[in-house]
Image (cartoon, rainbow, N blue to C red; front, side):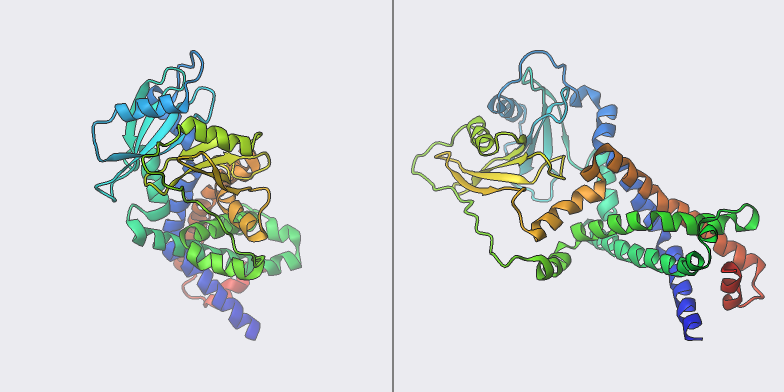
Length: 382
């Protein structure tokens, strides 16, 4: 009797979590699937600004940044960081932030690497893929939307876990019954349970990593309590201001960083904006799971060019490794193109589960009103 009551409780929990939050699961999942390939989609939509002519040798990073700065007329825009082309025919993306309006989106200026000509500029959040990104992780509603999305991730984890719990007796009885998809009246129910179980692990991973990125202040202390090696990280990231000192060239800073990791791929350089700030150069070494931007970093004194601090992604603590895996798992890049396609498909699963679950509920509601909920559940498990 106790087991029946517990099962009944999980049936109700699973059903109403899906019916109440299901549409949000669908929205977040579908937008997430599109964002897996957001760079490719953006290049398809905007080749005139994101694809280089590819003629001639590449210009230096200083020439690229100078061209980007000269193209702007707003004195409130301050150079923030720059990213090199991600493909052979890609362009530099130079990011500027608004110093007078902290709420304004970043201005992105695109520069052809071979000619140092500006191909265009946009504001982050005002074009399709960035709008889709904002919809995915904050429902276009700022921090309130982020919290809702994070809570949806937690709810989805509970929903998936409850679905596996309800499915488990079928597996114990017969693995064929557990995965069978029959035609007729049971088609929606069978498709729902089989799809849910097959996609369960993926949905749990994607949900958890999403929750981590929205609520790191909740997750990090828990992880550090288990995995922390007890050694405090000491990193000196401050330049030593020199009276009348001149900042070194950006290309010199990136060259210094490359000398620290000679086999690494240069991914980003963040420029100092204050006298004590340092250059921060981000690189990706072979084997790093974060392929889009890398996790190895070098901080360089903006006046002397001295290496101030190094973060080697291949020599990290267990906690650092755990944190480094979260975003690459969320978008699939940890496992290359195959991983991206897997995450793309997993984003479609909430839609399949919501539609099939809703149809099962609606059919029961219409045709079995005279039966008790316990009888209905017993019918499904026969």
